[in-house]
Length: 252
Image 1: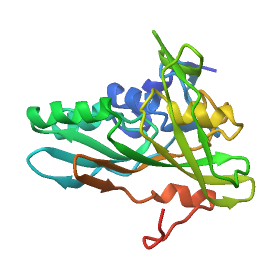
Image 2: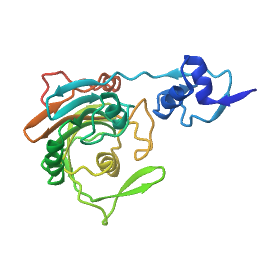
Image 3: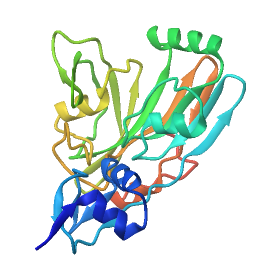
Image 4: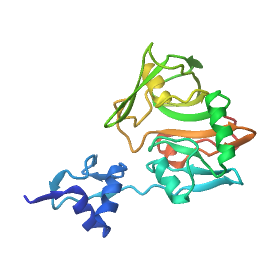
């Protein structure tokens, strides 16, 4: 049976450019026969039918002379958000992590904010849907070492690593899944993902550290507080598909 590159076939099916098709595959949004297409240039049968997942669009949470704060959907990179809004990033979220993302408009404020990050004066709360049942509060402080490779950064627990502290509080258990509140002051690369995997409570959909697949990696940047500012992004609807639903009046 005749074959062609996945992105070319997707472009034909969707009526989009090859570049747009490649970006969709690279973002982890394209499936065929129930499996995620991982390599845009992979050769597949020409009669393949693709299913494309369309993420919600980013929205503005807050804006003033210093900051532009965005509710980032999963699957869009932080760099793409910066490109869309034509504003530099103050920090980053992983591609599949949703939630509060801050862009900075004022160079002087940027310097002050970066110092606040360095001095661990920034409070961050994440919500993570994980495999397994976690019913007691726990604080993890194993140091994390990050190794940069051609394929991207990879982090692991190591005595040679930097200080990393994650305070974990269970919110809800549904079946054999838990919804956890994770508070961090340190912001090591993939900190929450590495810490949770280390206690056998990997984030659902974390292929790199949790060795499991799902529609997305269920990690959400729920709240961030720095320099007198405080921003929140409500839990996205896709968490409901796992049975986790929180009302707006619920105190995290």
